Image (cartoon, rainbow, N blue to C red; front, side, top):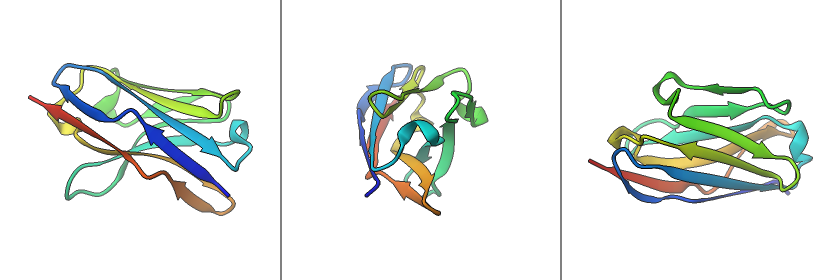
Length: 115
């Protein structure tokens, strides 16, 4: 059974930082591309950061230079370091993986950035 559990959300002032973590189980973690996604209230969920099995990373333009995705293949963890946070970064952040022919999601963690 694939399970993803996110932690690290909370409230922060604009310009602040937050580090999110996602614990994965039920997959051979090191083989999979892992994603962080963001969903603002009333908007569609969007991919913000991706890390491939080999460590290659990619980001949506709005977070480039501010967010960093990383992974620990020993602990089966993926992280999202978010710096210089903006009010538009507010929303629920979800960890996800495409495995066994479908997309798996965590329960999400709320980040609220106040101006």
